[in-house]
Image 1 (cartoon, helix red, strand yellow):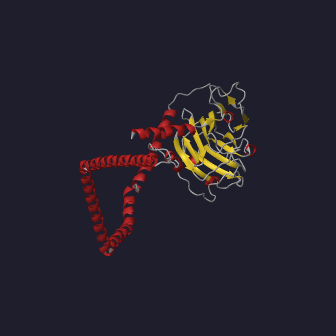
Image 2 (cartoon, helix red, strand yellow; image 1 turned 180 degrees about the vertical axis):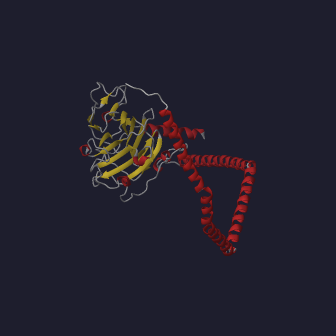
Image 3 (cartoon, one colour; image 1 turned 30 degrees about the vertical axis):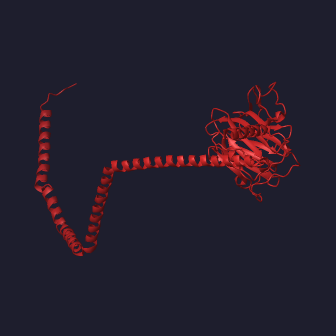
Amino acid sequence: MKMIARPLLAAAILATSASARSIVDNLSFGTGERISPNGRGLPGWSVSAQGHSPQILSDRIVLTPPTPANTRGALWADHTLTSTDWNVDFSFRASGEYQGSGNLQLWLVQDKNAVGQNDLYGVEKFDGLAIVIDQYNNRGGSIRGFLNDGGQNFKSHSSLESLAFGHCDYSYRNLGRPSKLSITHDTAGLTVKIDDKNCFSTSRVALPSGYNFGITASTSETPDSFEIYSFAVSTAPNTHTGAPVQAKRADSKPSPPTLQKLSDLPSAPDFLPDTLPETLTSQKEQFADLHNRIQGVTHQIADMYALLATLGHRLDERHQELAASVIQHGSSRDQIGRIDHRVEEVERTVQRILRDVESKDYRMQLSEMREAVESVRGGVSEHLPEKLGQIVRSSSPRHWSLIGVVVGVQIALAAAYVVYKRRRAGAPKKYL
C-alpha cells in the first residue's frame, strides 16, 4: 500500500507545482519592499484624483484622504491582462469617523476611459467586471459583484442593486488592519474571498483577456480614508489567451453546469487530486486509484459518523440541562399558576357585579330620591323668607334707643356751650 501511495503523492506534488501561478510584474504593485521606488509615481500604473493629491507612501497609497470631503481617486494599469486564468490579491484599509461613508471599486473593463474616476453609482456604460465595497443598505459593510456588457447605463438605472450577481456582508471600516480581497477566475468561474473566507462564487461568469485592471474610490460629506497596500496579479502558465469574448451577464441564458472541485468548497477535507482516465493505462493503476478513492470515501464516512455521534452527545447534554432547568424553576411555575387563579377570581367577581347591576331595577330608588330632593327644595323656599325676616328684626337697632342717643348728644352740647359762656364772662378784661 505504501508503494502505491508514494507515486500518487509525487504525482500530486508535480500537479501542484505545475499549476503554480506566477506574479505579473507590470500589473502588480506592493509586492516588494517599497510600493514606489521614488514616491512620485507607480510603475505600470496611472494615478489620478479629484479634490486632492494622492499620497504615495513607502508601504501604501492614500487613494482618498480623511479630509477634505467629496474627493475621488483612481489607479489604472497601463497594460492589459493577457490571460483568462488569473488571481488577484488586493490589500486595502478603510478608516474614518463613526458615520463615515464612501465606496471602493475594483474594475476589470475593456475601456478604462469609460470608467475614469467614477464609482459604480456614477459610471454610465462599461464592459467588464466591478467588485464594489461599500455600506450598501446600512448593513455595516458589504461586497458585491456586478457585470455589464456595455448595454446597461448604471448611472441612470432605477434599481442598481438588482444587477448584483453575488454579495456578502463584511464590516471593513476601522478594523485597524488591512483587509485582503482575493478574486480568482478560471474555467470553473469566478470566486471572491475576503480574509481567506468565501464571499461568493459563480460558474456562470467567463471574462475575456485583454481587459484593464483599475481601482477607484470616492467619498461623501463624511469621508472615509481608503488606503491601498498591495495589488498582486498572478496567472497560471500556458493559459489560453484566444480572441476576447463578451462577458456573460448573470441574468443571461445559463451555460451547462460544470463540475465543482472539492477544493472550491468551504472547509474541504483532504482529497485525492483529479486524474484523467487516459493517464491510467494499466489495470494496476486503475485498481490502485479506485482503491484509494474508495478508502478516502470510507474515511470521510467514518468522520461523518463521528461528527454525528458528537452532535448527538451534545444534544443529549442540552436536553438534560433544559430538563434540570425546568425542574429547578418549578416554584416559579407554581407562582404563575396562583396568579392565574387570582386573576380568574377577579374576573368572576367582576362578572357577578355586572350581572347584579344589569338585573336590578333602580327606578323606585330614583323616584324616592327625587321626592326627597323636592321636599327639601319646598321647605327651603317656604321657610327661608320668614327666617330671614326674623334674623333682620332681631339684629336691627330699636327706634327709642336711637332717639335717646340723639337727645343725649344735644343736651351734652348745650351744657358745654353754657359752661363755655360763663367762663368767658368771668375772664379778666384787657384794655389798651
